[in-house]
Image (cartoon, rainbow, N blue to C red; front, side, top):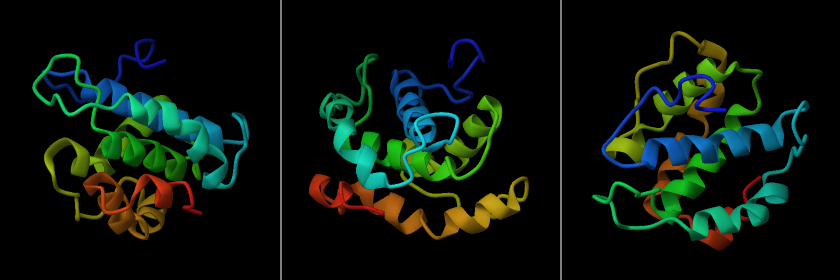
Length: 146
């Protein structure tokens, strides 16, 4: 789907943005009513263990797919964005807007004026996403998120 829509809009010298956005799309479509309609994160978190298990710490390798915590954070963010009906381009915009913590170690604190309702919703989860990305939320705790 990313290649059809010319995504992701973010690029690096590794495969990380592509792989993490793909993880995000998975979380998104698992939640969407026109996808798998899973409204509980616990329903999808256990199924996602394989993808996060192939995360790696070879951050300078061209084939780097993201670390396991980054991959968990990406799928959680996608699941949260699944609360909203977004086009592929809008998903890409919002995914990378909120996912700066994975790509450069910080989270955007400015208001997302393009999507104020979505921004109000997402502001509730930014600390959680940061804790997932940093590894403060363990894999076991991740599976129990609501």
